[in-house]
Figure (cartoon, each protein chain N blue to C red):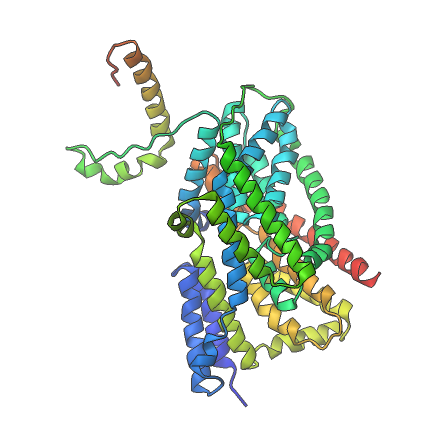
Amino acid sequence: MLDPRPYLLSYILTIALSLSGLFPLSLSAIIGATLAVLFGINDKLFTFEEALTFVDLDLIALLIGVMIVSEVVDRSGFFRLLALKLVKRTQRKPRRLLIIIPLFAAITSLLVSDEAALLLSAAVLISVSKILGLDPRPIALSAAVMVNLGGTGTLIGSIPNMAIGLRAGIDFVEFATYVLPCEFMLYGVTLAYLFLIFKDKVPPEAVALTDIREEANRGEVVKGALTLVFMLATLILSSFLGFPASAAALASAVLALTVCGYDTTEVFRELDWDTVFFTASFGVVVEVLSRAEALQGLSQLMFSMSMGEWIGYSMVTLFVSAAVGIVLPNLVVALTFIPVISGLELHDKRAVWSALVLGANLPGVALPTSSFVIVMTLGALKREGMHIDPWEVAKIGLPLTFVWLGFAALYILLRFSL
Amino acid sequence: MESFVEKRFKKYKEKCEKEEEIVDEMLGYPHIVLSIRLPDGCEEFVDKFINLPCDLDFIKKLENFIKEYLIKSSRGTSAEL
C-alpha cells in the first residue's frame, strides 16, 4: 500500500506557496510538481518519461490559442470602441451605466479573458467618469462582480471551464447549453441587485456633460472582430464536426496573428505565461496525486455525502467546490475535482460537471482574496485616489455568492431532472 | 487585507496604466511619458522622489503646471512654477 502523505504534502505545499506570494504562481506549482514527480519515481509509480505525459497538452493548446486571440482582439480595439460607443449612448443618464458597463464587462469576459474584460471596463469607466464628473466606484464594483459571473458560461470563458470541458469531453456548444441559461438568469438577478444597492450613488443626470469622442483604427477593429467571429465559428463547428476545441483555438490564433499583422514577439510577451505554467504544473501535481490514489479521501467524502445519486453528487460538488473556491484559486479547485468526478461510477455525469463549473467559478467575488477581480478593481480605483475598504466589498460579495449558489442548485435540479 | 490587495495589484498595475492610456487617447486625451532623473542636491529625498508618480497631489500640481506652461508658451511668454 502506497503512503499518500508525501503526495498530499507536495499538493499542500504548492497551494501554500501560491497563496503566500513568496514565489510566482508558476514557480510554486513547478516546485510542487517536481516534488510529486520525484516521489512518484522513487515509489516506482511511473517513470520520468511517463511523467512528461502528465502535462495536459490539449488544455495548454486551448489556453494558449484563446490567449493569443484574446490579445489580438484586445489590441485591435474592437471591444474598446464598442464600450465607448455604448457609453456615448448612455452618458446623459449615468444610472444606465450601472447596467450597461457591467453587462458589457460580463459579455466581454464570456469571449475573452476575465483580466482583459476587467482592464477594459475599468479603464473606460475611470476615463469616462473624469469627463462626466462621476464617482466610478459603484459601477466599477458592479463590473468586477459581473466579470466574475461572465466567465462562467462558455468553454473558453475561464481556465477552469477549459479544463473541465476538455476532461469531461464536453464540446463548446454542449457546454453552453448546460451552463449559459443559468448564467443569463444570474445576470438578471445580479444586475437588478447591484442596481438597487448602488443607484442612489450615481446621479440620474450627468453632472458635466461633454462630447465623448472616440478615435480608432477602423481597419484594425474590423480585423479584430472578424478574428473573434472566426474563433467562435470554428469552436461551434468543432462541436458538430468532432475536432478538438484546442485545434479550433490554435487555428484561430494562427489566423489572428497572420491577418492582424501585429508584432508576434510583442503578442507573445503579453500572454500570461505565469498562468500557463501554473496550469501545466498543477495539472501534473493532481495527476500524480490521482495515480497515488491520494484523492480517495475526497472521493469517499463525496460518496458518503451524496448517497450515490446524481442529485447528491451534483449538490455536494457544487457546494464543496464553492466553499473551497472562496479560499483557493478556482483553477486549483477545478483541477482537484476533475479526477474525483472522472472516477465516479455514474452513467450520466453532465449535472455533476455543470455543478463543478458553477461551484468553481461563482465564489470569485465572495471575499476580496477569492480572485483577482476585486484586487484589480480596488487597485485601479486606488490609483485614482479612490479608496474602498476591502471588507465593505465582502459585505456585497458574500451574500451575492450565496444567492448565486442557491440559484445554481435550483437550476441544476430543474435542468437535469426534466 | 489592504496590504494583500496592494501586493497583488502590483501584477496588474502596469497593464491598468497602459489600458487607461489607450482609452484616454481614443477619447482625445493624449498621454506623454516623462523620464526624469533625480535632480542634483536631492539625494536625501530618493524615496520621496521614487514615490512621486503615486503622489496624487504632485500629479495635480504637475497637470496645472503643464497647463500653465502650454498656455504661456503658446503666447510666447516663459512659464514659471
